[in-house]
Amino acid sequence: MKTYNNVTYMTHPLIKHKISRLRDKNTGTNEFRKLVEEIAMLEGFEALKDLPLEDVEIETPLETCMTPMIAGRKLAIVPILRAGLGMVEGILSLVPSAKIGHIGLYRDEETFEPHEYYCKLPSPIEERTIVVCDPMLATGGSAIDAITMIKKHGGKNIKFMCIIAAPEGVKKLSEAHPDIQIYVGNLDRCLNENAYICPGLGDAGDRIFGTK
Image (cartoon, rainbow, N blue to C red; front, side, top):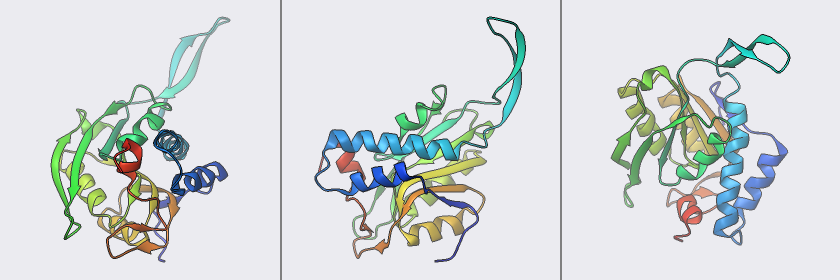
């Protein structure tokens, strides 16, 4: 597969281990939900390593000093509904002050094309670092459309985080939005005839919310 400069594949053993637990069909809803949250936190640690800093003055118990803190507008976390909601708490555990937006897309069962039904973003979105999250990057259609919507609202500094991805989705997203950074927990083999990632983990939304 072609290498894309804007794609980072996670290699941390903890991420790999937790993704393997997600794949297991015997992993129950509660554990699955917790694992998604934990993986999002571990990926977020990598994805947010370039957040801008500024020195601020604080008073310690001993003296006053200048010390670095995150600069600028608060981070914006934008899950793609509904499965993306499962990743939000993991990122929030790193940046509790982050604002949260939502993008609603559903996939046509015949064409597999995404359709928008909801979009609400923190304002001013153009001044924020934006993390779009969805556990699965399959065809890439939903991610491409969600990021296009954010750009239309003025978003500029955009990152995309997923837990597993198909090569087809990585290719389409990278080429459609070469200016964003993409973080992938694991690159799987391919899509099947129903546009599901293989070996995958099934339907992430159903497994997070117990609706399978």
